[in-house]
Length: 436
Image 1 (cartoon, rainbow, N blue to C red):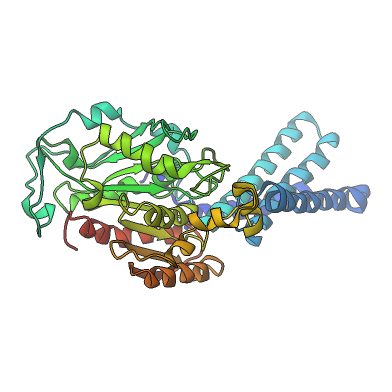
Image 2 (cartoon, helix red, strand yellow):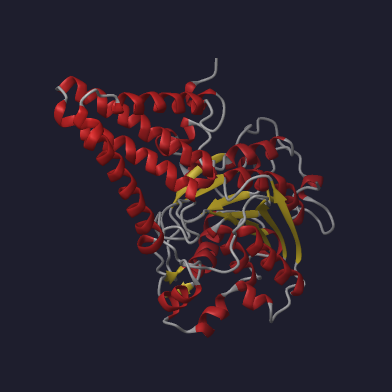
């Protein structure tokens, strides 16, 4: 029998059980024969829940704005269910004994957990409880121990792939390592959180192959760990390495926003020098701490949502560094919610300054035949897929080797996980690792 930590939170019995328990919990919380309960207490509890949910929606979408695209209606409704469990329980507490108060609070927790998991099912962020508990269950491997010292390098001659000349030594580990590292903002002074680094099995060989570098950015809100806990990046890269004698891209997952709900726009602006951090500072750290292929032979930038938008930005702003990009459900342009507020808050109203950093504006005036990119969107993502169509046409106009693919799903990890798995072989081939 599998470990309960690995049971699916998205499909199968767990979501069904939670929904049934929530129906029972709400029925138990509402059950009361007293006339005053049905005349005013229950309606008041429901009304307060509705009002609090509406207020939450206004705060999130109009004032706080952690999501540039706004809260999906389905997400707001399930958050309302979670709130409803709390308001009904709160109305019941004054008339209950201490033992029954504990029971009412327990029922409210069940309703709250179900609401949160339904939100999780919408975004498909955490497939299992193990993924939810990832930051506490898996703290990673010491980076210096995992990386070792510098060694001789196995390189591929012109016209051949690294896999053509690489022979895995005996005793090579079957899986790669994940390590948390600090990438200082020495030049940008960007206040970044810690990053994560994946080193494939072949990196621990001596001599080691000169592997390409893959930089993966999270969405917003988000953290660098999202690619690990929600994206399952180690499992995907380990599977690729197992099929290619230990070879896979060295993968760095840096911070691009400075906080979970921050939005740097991935630019150098009043909001912080995120672009300089992800180019100058990151390059300096990689050069000092990793043995990878040089940028002109193998650096890729990719990400989902905010990170997808950022990947196109950095590719056109720093093509000397990132000649390959992967845009998973990105936007037409960097945004804080709308164009006017974005230009005002980030550039003091200077439209020209924004356009000089906006990828679609840059693609309209310059050619980038050296760039190659893949754009992936969800077939039911009605907001982002049309925007990506604009980005795709702009890339074609600028001479970029670009393709756009739609996968089943919306603006969620259902698309981003599948998109990464689908495009990883292309990224590897593009960077000289192995043919598809």
